Length: 153
Image 1 (cartoon, rainbow, N blue to C red):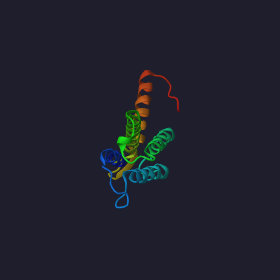
Image 2 (cartoon, rainbow, N blue to C red; image 1 turned 90 degrees about the vertical axis):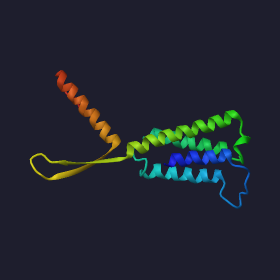
Image 3 (cartoon, rainbow, N blue to C red; image 1 turned 45 degrees about the horizontal axis):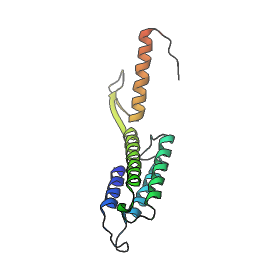
Image 4 (cartoon, rainbow, N blue to C red; image 1 turned 180 degrees about the horizontal axis):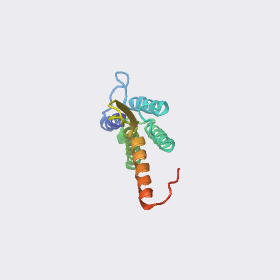
């Protein structure tokens, strides 16, 4: 959702006619506000709980490059074709990494009956944790089927 807003901010910046900056917030200021929100969400481990350290650094670096390229720019038309290409590539990188991290951070809860009772229990885990557990289970089953000893990671 936040990456969609980032996209909209840059589209507004690209299509905005020169408007008075005193009457409304400029698109660059909106980008800086959105950047601050994204960085806070990454730091707080709320929305992007499952983002890796390296991916968080990639996002920070890309956001800083976007800020630097927008510095002193009133209209996107002032930028060269190469600068615009780099800007949109960084934007796409940020959107992709944040979307994947947000999807991996989504919690999935399942209600199941416990063995030997009629009581149900609810277990919740992130999509990333669930995927890793399923992969570990698959690997363990494969090793059992082949007769090789199971090694713990």
